[in-house]
Image (cartoon, rainbow, N blue to C red):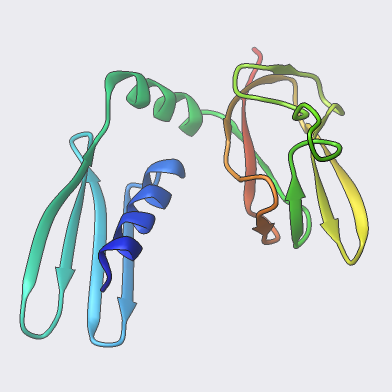
Length: 150
């Protein structure tokens, strides 16, 4: 498996606070697992087994991960292209650290040439934006994580 692809998968694991990612491609099985604050790669084939330390997580990132895990996951209600700002060059609807109220816009998802405003489903603080501007999103994919106000 290509190193670039493995690095991208490690990034996905870290960004989505996953603890394990298990992927089989042909005769190669790849297991990425977060262990002790590090992402560890285990690649198996019929001939070899490889372990590589990919990255470490700082204390600040660890705090962010804990907050994100405890946060409400605002998911996409449809398949389409996500836009984080109302138009090109404009300020984004939200950024990490912003306070949002239920019903305030967090992004737009374009589907079949219809622009659908996605509104916050709860009051709270944005702790993570899980998508990139212009990214294609699937139904149920996490768009943002909101730490709910007590």
